[in-house]
Length: 424
Ligand code: ADP
Picture 1 (cartoon, rainbow, N blue to C red):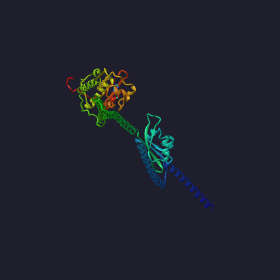
Picture 2 (picture 1 turned 135 degrees about the vertical axis):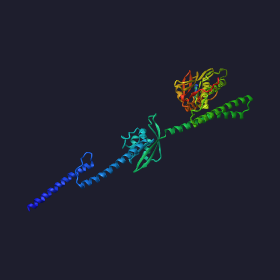
Picture 3 (picture 1 turned 30 degrees about the horizontal axis):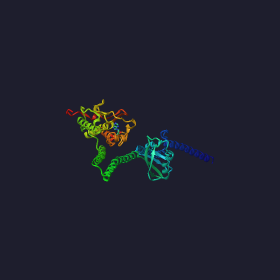
Picture 4 (picture 1 turned 120 degrees about the horizontal axis):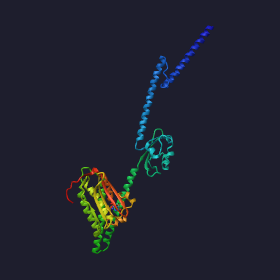
């Protein structure tokens, strides 16, 4: 009996010992399988070895899968980040899950710090908050950075629901579009205004001629005034067509040739004639050097239009008995310069940046009466366009009360050896 008890006790002790050993092995195994980098591989029986191999393979597959998913997600987020539109992903509560770089810049968000924040706590524009809370499916136009005028831009925001009540907000910058629309509206308004004035004058004269019996002299005088208005409208239409041609045609190639002596001689003759026509005996003292020893790779008609615009302005604005000088010269950097200087009234500095805007005039009444003919208000816009199409610039230096200098400056690449041998 005692012997049997001892045997059973021994058996029990062996079983407990074996169980403890297995438990230790199992622990070591689990430690190794879950973190093989920091735990040594335990000694294993064939069965444990097999189990380990299967588990390791399954874990490896799982890990590779997880790595692949993480890499795919990172690529996707990088692509969203690189999109030229702002994107914000929101959860069902309206908390930010992700925002790309453009959206972050629009609203000064920090993509990492602001994750999990409610969008309406960060984008506080009341129109946006109301729109967001209504879950509106029509787009909203709003302003980004309304307090920083230099940075402020017009944004169109659209909401696209996705997943489980989540939403994707898409912010498109429509600033340039709105500016173009405004420019187009202003342009149409300006053109209408410019045409309406001479038309009203013409209509008045027509009515007078129809309703009153006029002497021959009066008739002649009225007809001359009507002709003046027609000329004004023709000039406007011609300048508008020139501008649209300049905008619609490809930039002048380097094979084009403008014979500067010929162009300058033609412009000089026109300028003298204009001055005499406007001021008669008080015509200005005009000196134009007509013999540059180089030519330009430029479209002759465009260059001529730019040069004659500058010369005509000098004549019209510098007044009777003024002095006008014009010449071509070379720049230190090899470029070319056509400068027209007058001793007219000059232009105040605050007008200078706007002079080349379409229809911008420093002083409408002076522009109208000082030279007896209306300008179209498009001259310098055309000049600037021509300069830029040739890779050049229009420089304006003017001092109020002393005079103005307008210069067309072209890069060296446009300068070519003079070809005209004519003596001028
Ligand atoms: P406009 O047809 O009125 O002459 P421009 O575009 O040629 O239009 O010129 C714009 C404005 O610039 C003119 O209305 C005038 O006020 C000013 N301006 C241009 N040239 C001169 C100049 N040489 N001296 C003074 N003001 C000038």
